Length: 373
Image (cartoon, rainbow, N blue to C red):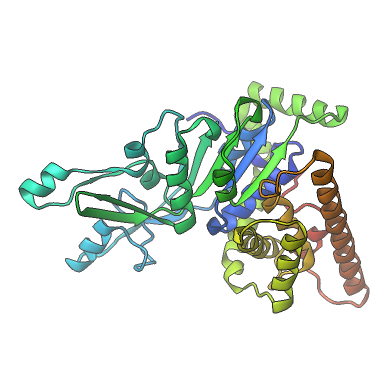
């Protein structure tokens, strides 16, 4: 197995890292699209994310990696085994990281049903596709803008619903397909249709880093990694373990994170001011805000969570306007976000002065949560 460059060792690109981490916490956000020029760590970050995710329990001998603890979300094969009285034995394994080639066909992605065997023997035989392998893991599509639009649509449908449903000649098969969809693209090579852009939960546009100090860090770390990958990974192991633990804790905390009617109004007001079409953005912002609050070990969302989520959920959903108008909108959003972070920092400082306990996670609100040195 080829060595993986550590996620926490990636210099800069904070928005991209945050978008990936939020999707890892809440797979229902709907994936992330990373737009950027060549050589900006897009694929490096996507591959490194899988190494951060905690081990999962899967049903032994299941092609789809079903969770033995969630009997209401099993594939048809596991359901049939349960009806026969079989015990679904669980085994632990790492989260899968599946690469989807640009040349992938529909059958390769969703899987195929053997119609001939069904007609002759009356047996339902399903040949799993890429979605089956990616269930409860990460599905990575490099150059997603070059993939067939119909295939992209199928991926986004499954990512949104969490289920892959295949039907041929009146015969159907379904299995869970809950994966983090990560698409990367270089806009210079062509754009995605607006309808497909809107289906990605979050989007971040990244550029090469111009700061000489950070560029020096990038160069030094890359050379060190290539010289001795094992030693480099060991050096970053503690930070990797720390972030992995934060993601695991956030996953457990997120179902209990609360929001108020006022929070919903804030989201609706924000998307209305930005003149965003449809309501998908509102839903995505709420889901991402809940994950952001959980990452910061809070049991309710705040304005900083909503603004951080909006910064990732809105870029690809804004109406086509003159460049200056769009830039002005995001400058205003960034100012609101910085103000919210400053207020959170001030609140944390006041709590400390009063002798109240403030968790170290909560203090992270003053900076970008997924950022590591």
